[in-house]
Length: 158
Ligand SMILES: CCCCCCCCCCCCCCCC(=O)SCCNC(=O)CCNC(=O)[C@H](O)C(C)(C)COP(=O)(O)OP(=O)(O)OC[C@H]1O[C@@H](n2cnc3c(N)ncnc32)[C@H](O)[C@@H]1OP(=O)(O)O
Image 1 (tube, rainbow, N blue to C red):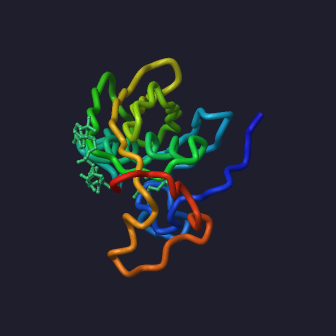
Image 2 (image 1 turned 90 degrees about the vertical axis):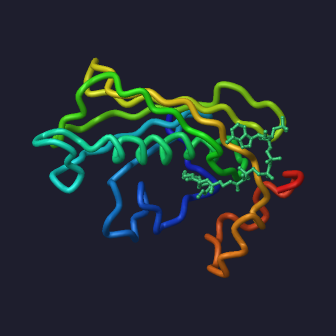
Image 3 (image 1 turned 60 degrees about the vertical axis):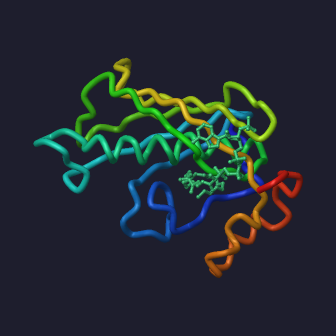
């Protein structure tokens, strides 16, 4: 059963932001602490005729693995991400997305994710996210999403 998150991501996110006309169209839903989703890339995301740009796939992965922060209820940032491109990412196909947290070690959140076209593995990724306090984002001077209020106040040294 899908669960509704208490937090939502930045509406201007380039991956999934509904208010961003240039978003990549990432759509996610949550089942417990697991993230599921889909994305449909088109000519704007081309790397070769009919194929997605690897950078688009990497950006989708960053967004997808980052979404796990929501059911984990921990704000965080990507410290490092590795994407393995395993199969062709064709434009015009609905790709399925899945991500989860493999391990938590203090502030270190080890995330994993996969993108598939049907049964074909298109890409897999591992990332280290670091849990930070929401104050991490205050320096920009931009207002933070309302649903981030009071989020993750226990992060140390953030
Ligand atoms: C925008 C996001 C919104 C999030 C809200 C949630 C919304 C939900 C949906 C999210 C979907 C979006 C997903 C996009 C997510 C991004 O794209 S985030 C943007 C890209 N990333 C950044 O801007 C991060 C920039 N880097 C930094 O700010 C700082 O380097 C960090 C990562 C906060 C770490 O700094 P720090 O807090 O001072 O901590 P530090 O002591 O340096 O490191 C802590 C530990 O991690 C280790 N570590 C740190 N960096 C690394 C590394 N690169 N490699 C290995 N180990 C490392 C350290 O060695 C240390 O280990 P220990 O010594 O404790 O064993």
